[in-house]
Image 1 (cartoon, rainbow, N blue to C red):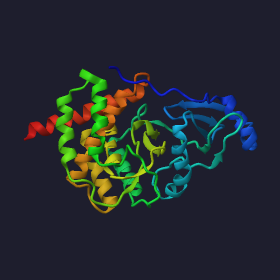
Image 2 (tube, rainbow, N blue to C red; image 1 turned 135 degrees about the vertical axis):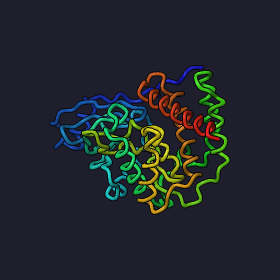
Image 3 (cartoon, rainbow, N blue to C red; image 1 turned 60 degrees about the horizontal axis):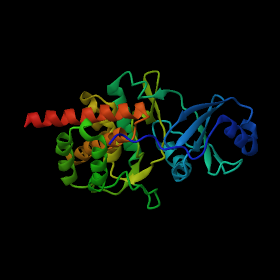
Image 4 (spheres, rainbow, N blue to C red; image 1 turned 120 degrees about the horizontal axis):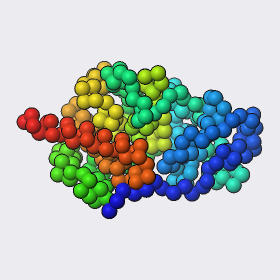
Length: 307
């Protein structure tokens, strides 16, 4: 078996389509220059002038995710210590386009996947504080997500399926040595907290060497904070993990315990396998997956050697 390709777009989102939608619904923006910035799994991002971005789903499944952003980012954004793209205008189906869409602020910077922070220690502290501010108890009507924030055991079938796709590209025994103790660890004992749900280097912006924003909250949900804490293995050198934990614990008022950190490492493992198994035509996601997997397994070998 080979890694899967990116899902096919169900609608062709072009600058011409964006122009038509703006002309009908937001005519004061229709004269501004338009440029496609990104064409991802779920959405197309089209820059509008210097300060705005149109965000349009390219698949029907992504429309619910976009609506979650429209509902919750204006609520959460003001209390977060880093900028997030809370929608400033809403769009509706029109001009042959079948789904809701958003206009969000343009946040300066390039993704950390292309432009790593200049000072990893500073980045670790900043991310720790950001996640502590985000990880507050979520209300009962927070978006449900069957893939993020859930008990690790509920991800086992997906981990197994992704290992089958990857075959001998991955050391299955090494994966099992990390996965099984984490699944056996105590579950998150607290209330479900707000989660970004997809916090990896492609969704973290860096400007002038410093983290400048966090984007793509389509997977926003609630649950076990370990899901988001997995970013430590995706972005930060191992030597900065202590700074990340310390900043998170200090800002949250309680340090991450060993079980939370164990589950976070397993989430990094699970997500790395998902990235690798679904990135045949997406080298950026494949690279994030490979780097994360290597970081997780290297730490596993180090821990095993220390016993």
